[in-house]
Image (tube, rainbow, N blue to C red; front, top):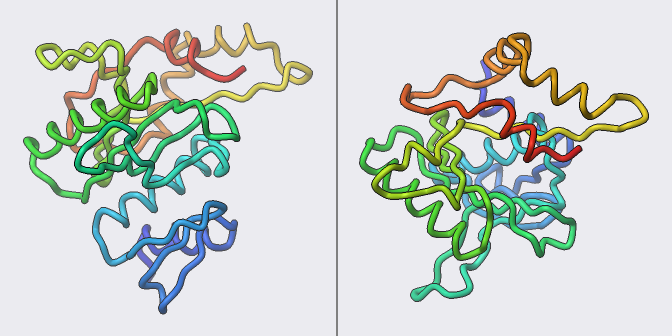
Length: 211
């Protein structure tokens, strides 16, 4: 029986998100052509999150960068994933730090700070930290090491793309204020290993959605 991860890889390959080499030992992300060793536990986490970004959250693959170099970092450092606001990949939106599943709480907190540091270097408004199914999203400008909970709002980000000819944007905004929306959100989200994640009001998600 195939594992969930194996199903994701197969579906991603079928839809053109991935290509595999060396009998599945190396993964090539499409359309960028970036290749990595899939036997690395952190790479498995990145591959699954890359799939979710496209398939579940609706981000175009052309706007997702991998191993993006930090311009002012010595020694050289790279962001695992950067989601951009434009196809030219000149306006960073979300910076993602990926770690293997099962890391300690202390390691996760340190990875969270790394995601924020990278987001600040790239002037991205949001940062995500992903360690298997444990996911944390943060607002870069609000982050404060002494009160990090104020910047944490969810383990994922929902991106709205609305055709005004088919739906009224203000109606969609009002829908996100309802109990129905909260129930729907709880149904689609994956369980997190850390129950301390805070939820921001739906209004903030709607303000940052693409409409």
